[in-house]
Image (cartoon, rainbow, N blue to C red):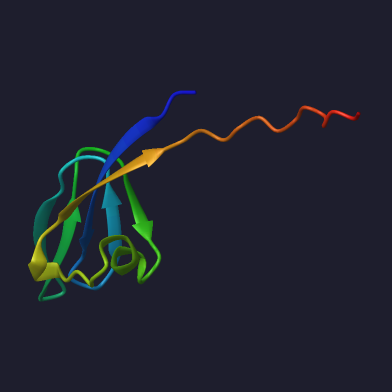
Length: 88
């Protein structure tokens, strides 16, 4: 069985949206309706996480001003459980 290492970066946008990225994100700021809106962007893939996910992953809350954090996880493929149990 092989395992796959996943390196993810997590960050929180200025509006509190929790994000995960597969490459290093950068802060982006732009003016929208006279207000500065800040969000994290990346050239790679990203996911919006459920509120509270980053605290579960890191063990503490993360805010916009804290920057991004790198996380390392290992994905183990699901085992094939389609074989029938042996009878004796």
